[in-house]
Length: 144
Image (cartoon, rainbow, N blue to C red; front, side, top):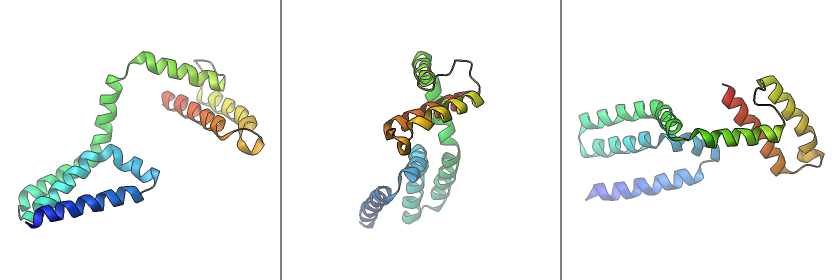
C-alpha cells in the first residue's frame, strides 16, 4: 500500500526536479538516464527491505553513470551515416570559409575574423553568431 504512494511521490519529485534544472544540468542527466532509473530501482528495493538487490542496483547505477554516455556515443557513431556527417562538415566549412584540410588554428582564425563582423554587438545577429559558433565547434570536435 505504501509503495505505490512512494513511487507516485518520487515521480512527482523527479518531474519537479527536472523542470527546475537549467539546460546544462539537464544535458548532464539526459544521457545518463539508465543510471537514474537504476538508482530509483535501488531506492524502491531498499524501501521494500531487499537490501542486497538494492546494493546491486546501486552499484549498477554507479557504473551506468560513468560508462553509459561512452557506450551510447559509440553506438550512435556506428549508426550514423558518414555521408550526413560529410555534408554537415562541408556546410560548417563553407560557413567559416575554410578548406577541408584546415588546422585547428586556421579554424579559430576564420571564426575570429567572421565573428568580428557577425557579433551582435557589432551589428550582426544572434542567429549568425550562433551559426558561426556551431560551425567552429563542429569542426574543432572533428579534429580531436
